[in-house]
Image (cartoon, rainbow over all chains, first blue to last red; front, side):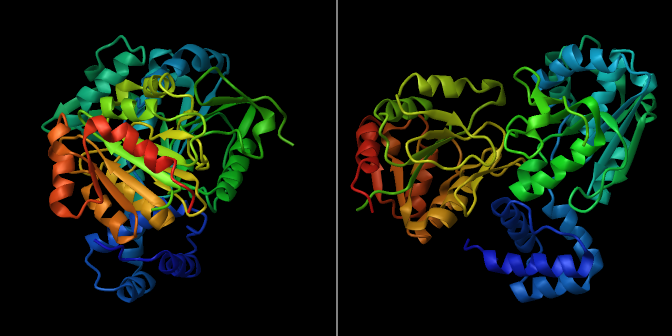
Length: 275
Length: 192
């Protein structure tokens, strides 16, 4: 019951991991991170902090498990249908005017949001001229995203989200169900590129008209958020869009001045030139 | 007993009426921060903020990530996120797996609040049909905080407070109809 790892012990651990593996978690939100680390610690039944620390320092395989378990990979298709409705009605018609559309899903986990976007683009007749980049720090989830296979048990929920988002087709036409798995259509996956990317240490890799980073920044402290916002700012074309989670905001970030919020949703448009 | 810095009021099925009663007793001059953690359907949307606002003159805010915990405000945990508190007394949101089939999980918030506020924390567990919150309450007690449960006899769904009472010595067991006056009394105690 008592917390197995103390706050100060976590700090030691984070310093170890940065030195040993180059992964920097020191600017992650501490309350959530501590809870995730404690969860792993008790899941794997370590008798003491010292043994946990030793294992992490000397077993790179176990460090992989650490990254997989400590980062949050929960996601769903068309989460917050009203957000997707706004994408359909307000954002996609603007993107339609470009000859070629590039979209970045930063921190995409197992890719459900990328598939959601591909469906929207397809229905708007834009998928053929679009490329969707999905990136995440965790290689395991990127592998899953590439496969495009999700549990059938989720489909009813996703179908409801789809209808609420303004979808008028039969959602099941986008996948083939086989026992408990649903494999999404290759016409969708064909326009996706998945890759590992660490927002903490990696840089901008392309220019986009739309960047989505939803429920990722909640795990970062303000200082790290500021760095990530700068990467996004650098990676957005002028008049491009940045979409965040429903409880996240650009308001207190260093790039806020160059952006204008679109309606009530957490979508901002870049209105300044990259300096 | 001295005034706490934060009161967390949590509940599940059958707790909304009690929460509304408590909120109605709170005025604009609330000397501490209050946080409501209520299990609810995502489709409920943010109308809870409007509903609570209509019952009190204290400011009511559904939490956004990194909001500071400010005395005088009644905060609501947003649906479908876990809510934690950082050492610098700001809110932190987390969209990880459900805990006790719940997101927000009351256990998660109680534990995190206890780490930050220790003895300056009051946790209140109301009506509900599962045991989310009970483990968290044990931790709150361990850290010196005050734990309050709704009298299960007066709860629409008694399981949650009942379970807490079985597992630990609850500081105050309060019937539903007395809860507003009781919480108000705690909130307006002289400062620590």
